[in-house]
Length: 332
Image (cartoon, rainbow, N blue to C red; front, side, top):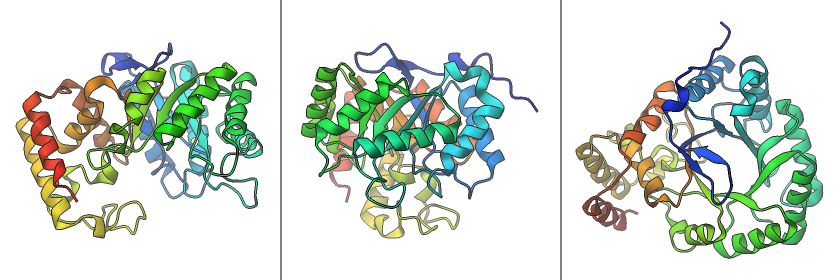
């Protein structure tokens, strides 16, 4: 069946300006880190992308090494884009990244000009695109001069291969330095993508304030802590869960008795709010307006519905914030 986008899609989503830019991002963005490689049925990936767009999710986030195998998420996305989404290309924000190992040898990793430009060229070919909307440096490179990496990002924009550039996994001090270099070059940093959830709050000490001061947006990845902040593990570890799959991103050892007690306490707060735990966890990351968008993964359509359902109950009372902080202060 030929895909026709839901005409009411934009009524279902909230959009916020990304930093001081003119670009608005949906409160919920869709990450293709998992569930879009060659091990996943293409038709399942297609239905997820269609449903996401029908819910008003306009931002699809990829990277060169997403799969498995590396590159396959971009290739599969490119096929679905050609077959389903070409009429709506100008309604989409498509992002990719480079910074982790992508190919053998000294030019397939980190942050050299050689690697970043070659990697983006490969990503564009895999996706069948002339440009991406956002291109990120995926992680800091301790050996390449920061100016070289930022000049490569500037060059990529001037080539027309990306409309905006961003950073990911940069600590606050290095992010400030990188943002200043990009400003001096005339290609402002649009956005920073850090890991941020109730269980990983390092960004609160300095990074979020630094980004606000610099006029840079923020999109949080892993806002559900790999599934820990859902109802998935309230009654043990299901056989078909990520924790039981041998995933290096979540293993049973992380689900300690103390951690599960914290999850149960947070779930009780969510239930009083009339939400699922996952919905409260997403709303919590967006609280205060310092985060532009939360980046979620999904393997089922219902997970997308749950995430977007959060938008009807995003606010927290002072008492709720105090209670959640008290619960999290005891998390291990």
